Length: 153
Figure 1: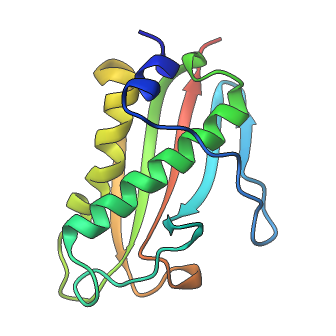
Figure 2 (figure 1 turned 60 degrees about the horizontal axis):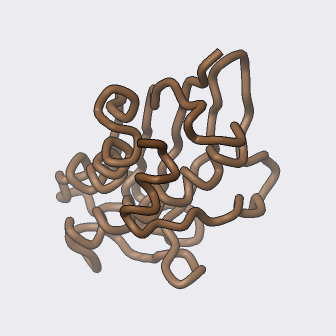
């Protein structure tokens, strides 16, 4: 099944690439690798604000990470033209706006990781990953995630 067919079966429509909010580009390709800039969580087109462990729980954070995965897929499609060109999701790095006592950043990030595995399948979608708790994210967003993908030659 193609990636587009999987997205359709999940009821997911990919958004266009967001306009950068500062001095950076949404993605850079180097050889067969595509590096996607960090994407913040959005809700209703605005930053999804919150702090895990204070104003949000793990399930809300996981939903925010899933929403980011959809935005990342839109950017990745713009970068490579067709998501079937993706050979592997190599790495995901997640920043979770959280209190010092919140320790479930890895579970929040699962919202992104699980969707990538659903969309690409376990062979292509499984990836290395880091999940960090941070004191703040731009615009007060609850989660920010960046991604590295390898394209087929």
